[in-house]
Amino acid sequence: MSATETAAGTPTVARAAAPSGGGEPETVLKVDELHVTFSRAGRKIHAVNGLSYRLQAGRMLAIIGESGSGKSVSVRALMGLLPPSASVSGSAVLGDNELIGLDERSMRALRGSEIAMVFQDPARSLNPTMTVGAQVSEAIRMHSEVSKKEAQKLAIEKLRLVRLPAAERRYHEYPHQLSGGMRQRVVIAIALAADPRVLIADEATTALDVTTQAQIMELVLDLQHRLGTAVIMISHDLGLAACYADDVLVMYAGRAVEHARTAQLFSNVRMPYTKALLGAIPQVGAAPHSRLNVIGGHPPDLGALPEGCSFRDRCPRATEQCVERPPLDEHEPGHRFACWHPVDSKEELQ
Ligand SMILES: Nc1ncnc2c1ncn2[C@@H]1O[C@H](COP(=O)(O)OP(=O)(O)OP(=O)(O)O)[C@@H](O)[C@H]1O
Ligand code: SF4
Ligand SMILES: [Mg+2]
Figure 1 (cartoon, rainbow, N blue to C red):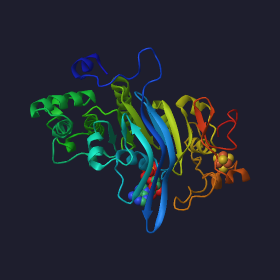
Figure 2 (figure 1 turned 60 degrees about the vertical axis):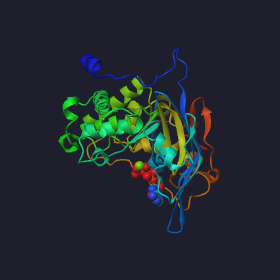
Figure 3 (figure 1 turned 90 degrees about the vertical axis):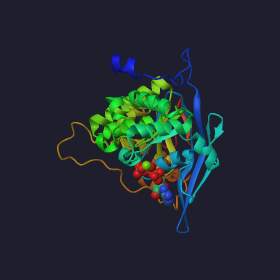
Figure 4 (figure 1 turned 135 degrees about the vertical axis):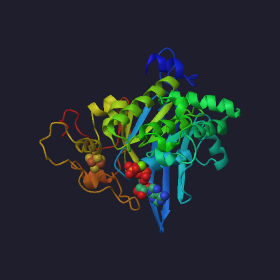
């Protein structure tokens, strides 16, 4: 960010990112034994199966995993955004509030003010018939009793905060007049309208080109540090997680299977599934036309989860012991993984 932009556009800082003195930042969200089951055509679909984690102020947690592993359902459960066919149990404490089982009225009060979400497609998140400024102002007025004029001023500040170029002019424009990257900035401004403690970005940059994607991630990182916002980033993209997240949680069949600080996880992968995910990334320098590694087999049927380790049908290291489910234990300080026969950190990653 340029000095001019900082001077012109930085509104009041909402929360401090980290405690002075360099101690551990405050834990803002505690998720324990979260379960989500859908009833579909007489079957029970076990989408999330005992997920637990902590999220700290000013830090970014990346949740990664194959399609269908339960990433989106797990965060929608926190926001109370699942359909009636979903049955949710466990605990998710945000500040002083237990989110699981909260009535819709109380949840609506927390959505935006305490926890907010940005989705993949900015075009669908915005109302095409309203100017972007009016949409940010409306979000501000939903959470605080300010006049229309004051809301407009605050909305322009928010649009500057997310570094929307020419924010005052753009305030009066409609979504179709903005590029995809600008629209996603507006969506983030709306999400930040009431300074939430937790911002969830569910594949928020997937629809954008690589350059815009990097700009949006830099923006999120900057907001996270300046405002102390805790971020959950959901992505298929391990590269993004490696670049931007402080912590990484790998999900498989609705469970966390590996969870550590980002550098620790990527330098010392222990869970065979994480190793397989990394092996599925195209390698720079691979011979032209060489085949991508894909993880063999399919994720298990969430309607009939096998006993034991859910990865065992696809795992090259599986033994009879894997018929018993491995616990997600902290085997090394700060590094949790669920596996009876972990990858040796000295083995070369394929
Ligand atoms: N409304 C629903 N009814 C029944 N099953 C659902 C519903 N929503 C999600 N599921 C199931 O829950 C599982 C987890 O879905 P989820 O959307 O969380 O996956 P994901 O990890 O976010 O995948 P992706 O990376 O493709 O977004 C999937 O098997 C999905 O089919
Ligand atoms: S517990 Fe067994 S099946 Fe599961 S990942 Fe480890 S070795 Fe593979
Ligand atoms: Mg998803």
